[in-house]
Length: 194
Image 1 (cartoon, rainbow, N blue to C red):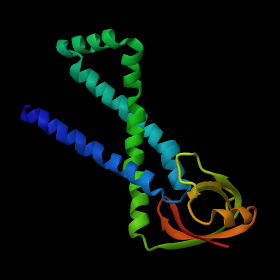
Image 2 (image 1 turned 90 degrees about the vertical axis):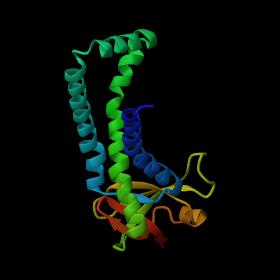
Image 3 (image 1 turned 45 degrees about the horizontal axis):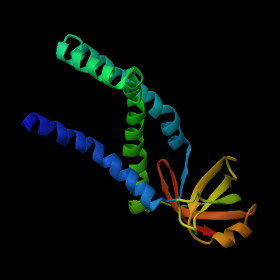
Image 4 (image 1 turned 180 degrees about the horizontal axis):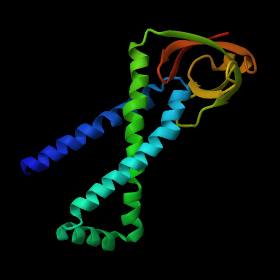
């Protein structure tokens, strides 16, 4: 292994490791998070558009840089012939999805991580508890998916909660007070008061 290959491996792993670590943390801890409009704008509008633009820019850069390189052209043509046109081009079309995942993990989850551990900006608000449903089978038995209605903006939010499942079922369609910490992209629920 040459120094150039080692450098590329180090750069690639340093770019990919933090988002993978953040995703693993988010799946393991699963903080009850209520997103605000800034989070929705980032995840549903800005990051998809930015992912497509960055992927197109990287594709144009790669095309300009490697268009004259016969070795690259022959290697790419061999790859397409070996795996088929669909798989060869589908891999290229999947790049915006990977860029979107990286942006989401690097920015949105890191802000949730910061708010969960370091934010002391307390928050509480009254919501109407609309539904208490069972979580999918890959979650704990005590997990329940709560759907709440914001009484100020009339937006529905869903999150998973692991405590007081039987009591919450009896409180369905009543108002509850959610207490937690506030972050720039939403609120993390730490306690439900009834």
